[in-house]
Image 1 (spheres, rainbow, N blue to C red):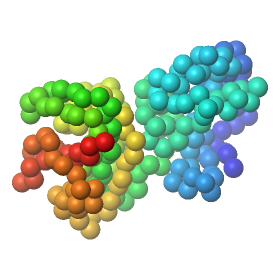
Image 2 (tube, rainbow, N blue to C red):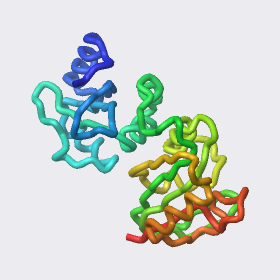
Image 3 (spheres, rainbow, N blue to C red):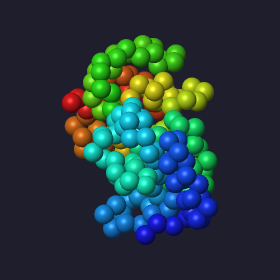
Image 4 (tube, one colour):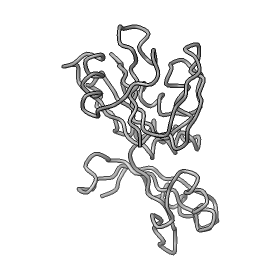
Length: 221
């Protein structure tokens, strides 16, 4: 079941797709196969070469295209959906449909980011560090408006304020976990460290206001 758009919006999207423009359409969506996602963004273009090229720059595979003759398109859901909308300058889609990645009653989050090549990254005043290939999990908290905080972290281009802002452009976010306050931020960090048997590489990352050595976990590939 799909809803949350009107006929004129759908008609306009199809016209742009058929004219060779790259067009985006976000709507509410309910499907038992994907219980954690209730919005989808369709990115379509009748110029298949353009659509494939666009998809590849975001790590999307050509076989994921719906080749329906009237409007070939990709379906985007979850964190990848939000990431692409921000990168394409389509924040209004996020605001209008309030993409439901985050439980608003939660106060803690863990952002999983992958880096696909070894990098040396300057993390603000903290210093310059080596970041080898692998997955990094940043654990943070937001006593209020956790959705806004996480969506800001997902966005690549923004004024740099937190340590994670410097790391964000260097990799891809593939999932976000949120948690209630039964554990505080430091205890949750330790719990996730034990759960994933993770390493610690960057001392002081995200932990300037506590006694933890870092709030950034590392899982080598």
